[in-house]
Structure formats: structure tokens, C-alpha cells
Length: 125
Image (cartoon, rainbow, N blue to C red; front, side, top):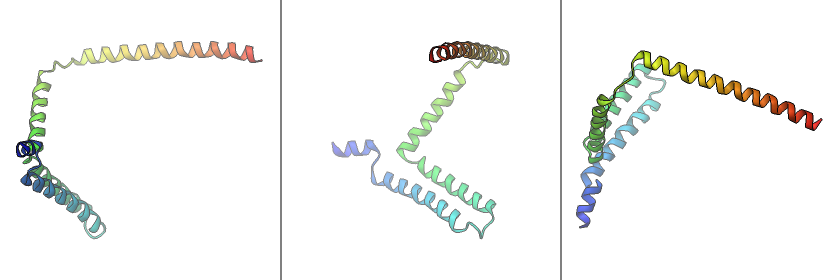
């Protein structure tokens, strides 16, 4: 029973090794970027970090959690295709309505503040 639970939780030795490789690759990228800070062009350092990050992402996607994340990403893309996005005209109209209400509420709050300030000033002295 514990083996089944352990396999489901993603803590098998192969998974642990894969995550260790991810950590080493990311650590190597950070170390290399700082170690070669002044000796190597920033372009080459950035390319090196990007290559190591891509390698780490590839290894991470081979894990159970990585596959689950990738499936979640695919499902999210499918759901985004189902969304009915507003037209430009609807977006502009909605934005103008929101701005109008913000200005209206700001004016109302200004007058409430002005009136309360006057009342309190007369009470205090």
C-alpha cells in the first residue's frame, strides 16, 4: 500500500533524480552567470542561462508533476479558445462607462469631504 501511495505522490527515485537534475541545471546557470560576470559578454551569459533554463524545463516536463502541469496548460488553452472575447467597440464603451462612474464617485466623495470638513471646522472652532 505504501509503494502505491509513494508512486502516486511522485517521490519515486527516478522522479527525485529528475528534480535533482533540474536543480543542478538551474544552479549551474546561476553560478555561471555570476562567475563569468565580467569576463564574458552579457549576450553569451544570457544565452547560456536561457539554454540551461530550457534544458531544466525539458527535464522538469518529464516528471509526473511536469506532465500534469503541461496537461493543465493544454486544458487552459482549450478553455481560452471557448471564451467569447468582446469587440473593440464593446471594450471602449465599457471602459468609458467605468471611467465615468469613477469620476462621478470621486466628485461625490470630494463634496462629502468638503462638507464634512466645513462642519467639523465650525464645530472645532
